[in-house]
Length: 71
Image 1 (tube, rainbow, N blue to C red):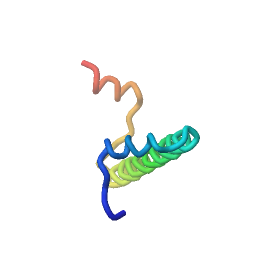
Image 2 (cartoon, helix red, strand yellow):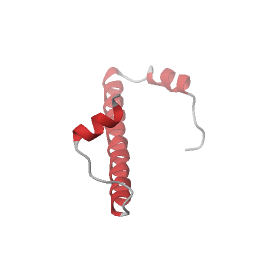
Image 3 (cartoon, rainbow, N blue to C red):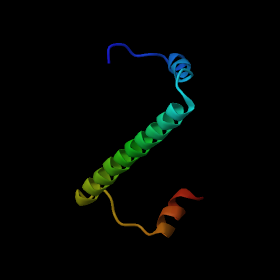
Image 4 (cartoon, helix red, strand yellow):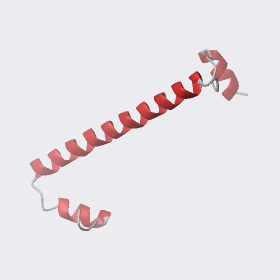
């Protein structure tokens, strides 16, 4: 990408798209966001597993977790 555009420039550019193209754009962005979220969750799971294997975490029941967050 040669030059980043501002959010406002992006919104203005979207106005030049047809409604079908705008709907397709929304669909693509939603799928990308979902994929980014899946990747974030996967990284968190891998990190938690590593910490567990290193003995930094121990198994807890849902009740244990609730007791630790609620007074």
